[in-house]
Image (spheres, rainbow, N blue to C red):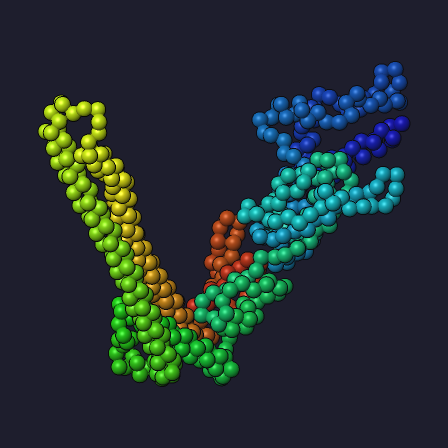
Length: 475
């Protein structure tokens, strides 16, 4: 019976080692109160061992006695060295990696296994070197190989969710390697195992020597192409500037015109001049049309004013006649007029009616004058807005052309610097910037240096100042 009890105690010890690790066994043992024995002998029978009533360590009591918080199973597993696989540094997880975890659980009442798609998935390693796994939480994975994550994830699933599962971990994608500096094609390149600086330089076109005529021809052709594009932009800029100023020609110096003839050809220059003259002719035609429309509107306004003045004069004349007739009728009658209507009174009534009609005519004439004046003002505003909009478009085109020319100038300088440096890349300084957690480490490397995912390679010509100071120090 004692042998069976000791066997059960051994199984309990194995369970403690599986959960906390053998290196944490002393710490777990100290959490068990010394005053509570696991096994004691009965007083009546010295040969029959009796198991204690407590079958597992009381972690609650131990935690209450200690000021330290008990770590979770996932924290313990992922902060300790959990596997001894021989993994090269290039195969360790870094920030930016995308890891694929596949979880396989055993079906109930069956020996078959199936994939838990709710727990499987692809996870991106963040800047802190962690991934977020469903049911477990955030796990620190940076600096470990994928094979070293399978066991801890499986154990964490068993401890946190009670799921007995098998886990496989692999890389989905890896961060690219970047290169910049005096190379033909700077940018990002896919990381491959055993990628060296020399191989990356070959991909980026930085290992060409003076005998590499194909590379030189490529760069020279690119330089000539860029210069041709720049000449075209210069010609366009001159045409837009002249068009905005209203000049009839490009107004370029003779040496500049000769250079443009050589780079672009006389037909291209003459064609741009023809475009300028056509644009100016169109602008002149538009201005003439606007002047004609304004002249028509002014004539309409004058006609409306003339009609209004005529109606006003007619109204004033009839008003005077009515007033005079009214005075004459008042003098003749002097209160003695009978009920019979006289001829003058009938004429007076007629004048009042005609004046009433003229009131409406005067109002209509005034409204026509106002409409004609508003039409003329609206035309002037539309013309001014149209000309301002056209000038704004021209100014924007001039600015865009100038910006494109400046960008081409920078690219020309870069290409010609590569041409000049084509035979001297062997002495270039090569630096690698590598992220170590939250820090960036800068390394001076040679061409056989092996790169890691996410590395930034910077290729620069040697610093003349450093070389001169080194020579002075040697003297």
